[in-house]
Image (cartoon, rainbow, N blue to C red; front, top):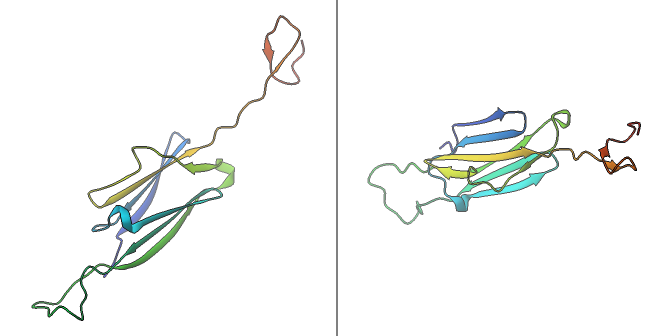
Length: 125
């Protein structure tokens, strides 16, 4: 059977990325996440719930099992995205939601001898 029906990435305010994956029947224990240079690798491995050799089926057994892997990578020109430990990252009603946040570039400032006011580098004082 098919393990997954769809996966999509949504953009929000250019800072957040939401990855939504429909994975009915999957539990937290079936999910493994791996951080990548600019994104995340999702591995879902569903074990067989029923040993079909031992059980005498009355009707055909339909089990969703197997391994599904996908890398969600973002273009470096969009910035660097990393997985955030947020309560929005969750598995609920068969839908896995992962939240990634863009790392904000830290601006560097230097104090100049002009009354202690901070100025960007290169600004005249």
